[in-house]
Length: 327
Image (cartoon, rainbow, N blue to C red; front, side):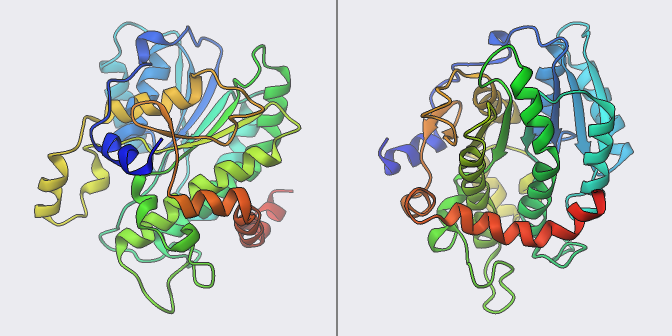
């Protein structure tokens, strides 16, 4: 697809081709959605719960979880045989990510898919995470990378015993903000922008380009397994992600934004649409469920210049102390 035309259709997408009505009964399936107490995440959790799945709700607080449960159960189309479970974590603090992953692993025998959905775009008070990372990088990238590393053995074992090939998936939620990231998607010599500084959109764009790169690299690393790894732009949506924008920019953005449930349609498309695991693993999707492509230099980087391996090695070094603590 032509990138310019794709960008236009990402702002004004065609109708979704896969919605909650198209999903099968998910009774017995176990899923994790990070950032599942608001925005796209809560709409996704609602769909999965309505289809009778067990859904782990990744969130920072019990209060947010309680509100999410009330909303999801109140707005379910009919009584569910599924279950909602709290998985408390704060992606701004890698210690809580490790403990949350350990809790999940101890409670369930399998994990059918995970959506790395949580993220921030600007923060009203913080510029760095607990471990000192630039807040977008630490929250949107490093936290999810640690979580994925800890869950990988369970994803592999779940995929090996799944009835359907390519049904166990890791979904990395990116954004068309990858268009605003540095060259290659990553400011390699200074990912925290400590030396040169950058605007919020550049920092956010870098974190979303990283999600695309990691999804492709994880797919490569899972080539001998049945695990699928994909990334996506959920769409231009009216969510809490915009709360830190200037009022004028929020109003302008809302002219081209949609209800959060449409972003959930992009996310279920990535998780449930049929793909060829040999040729389409690592793909990128655009609203409301179509194959797409990120910015050309980002794609060229991970397909031709091994930027995925470079980013993976960088992040592995960063999270090593937290993996060692869990052994």
